[in-house]
Image 1 (tube, rainbow, N blue to C red):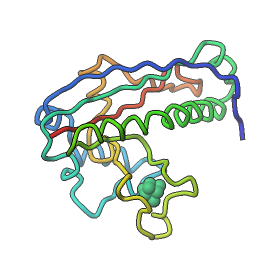
Image 2 (cartoon, rainbow, N blue to C red):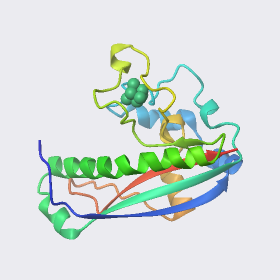
Image 3 (cartoon, rainbow, N blue to C red):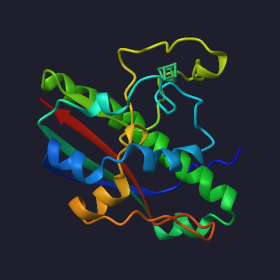
Amino acid sequence: MFTFANMKYTVTSKETIIGADEFISRYRDVERIRQFCLQCPGYGKAWNCPPFDFDPRTVSDGFKTVRFIATIIEFDEQTRAACTSPEQAVEVGRQAMDEVWQSLLPRMYEMERAVPGSRCFTFRCVLCPEGCTRPEGKPCRHPDRMRHSLESVGFDITAAATDLLGINLDWSGDGSLSKTITLLTALMCP
Ligand code: SF4
């Protein structure tokens, strides 16, 4: 497997607070977003991804405010230039996301603990290094700690990032490593 031990990137963040009703009315569109999920190779392979045996709207209903957070990974030019194939770009991007997520997830739980009744919305579930139990048809090992991503429960995070944070998600279409990768998370509060 390709690894890029000396890759360099910086991490910055941007966030905003918005009323939950407004966030839902502007950005929640469960059926439309599920069409994107259907194209993902991970669809149905982890318990925090659709399809669900419950209405995903219930996960984000009942809150008053949303703290919407972008964590931006920006690669330096040398790192980008050193990625000479689409496979390397994918692997370097994944490695950086995993590294950043390892420190970001505990902070999301801390934010949640600090606000009773709140719930964080995260990135992909990495709680089980041995792999998710869903493909085996077994229950989630950590239902108390597993959290959903905003997109998995029907939010258009691309539109929200553009409108609320002025961030255009930088999808590389030519197989090169994107200049930035942005992780979008949220804390919904009562
Ligand atoms: S906690 Fe484990 S079993 Fe549950 S969704 Fe995450 S990876 Fe799957």
